[in-house]
Image (cartoon, rainbow, N blue to C red):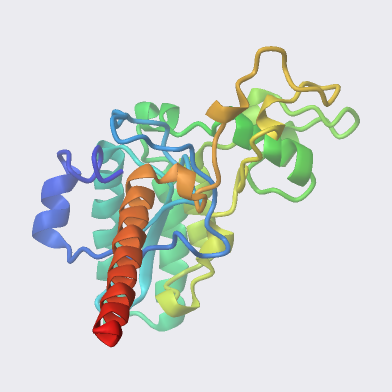
Length: 263
């Protein structure tokens, strides 16, 4: 996200000129999801909007800490810029002295749902859910998940056609509409960002329908848990070197102390 969308136009200039940016590391949070390992020489590429919702969330807040919007996962720079502009419109509602709090919240929800229709076709096309996330929702949450259009699911066969799956831009705005002008400290962002597969099991992603590992599958190349040190080779190496330096310092100090005592 940092290497592609946040550093690209048009979102880069909007963030630099109109927002105060900050970040919070959720790597060790219990709700943080999984990620494929990223090698030092790996190239940064774009993916579909909303991918990796458990790994990253982009919040837009008012100066007093009210959530205007939250974009879970990755978002293309063009689409992110559109949401940033929309957040500025929501901020105008929050500042309007002529509106009561109830009126502000009602307007917020209406605007969130109305903004879905304003998304261009190419943004919708970039906002499809990943196949493994859809599969997880079908298997574990078919009866309760809000990522499906209920009237498109066959109640008898429980089959889920492609048109029954909402795009992530729709999911995001519908969930925001249910959270009008909530303070960040009270925002249930782990639940808000909870769709698709939260954790990857190395073997599970290579199993066939009969439970056997697919022939020729290389388990070592499977996705890794985001908090698994192997998923962060650079950080892991820094920590490893730091520990080595510390151990060497302690060892030398012990040797110096022993030699001093002998002499």
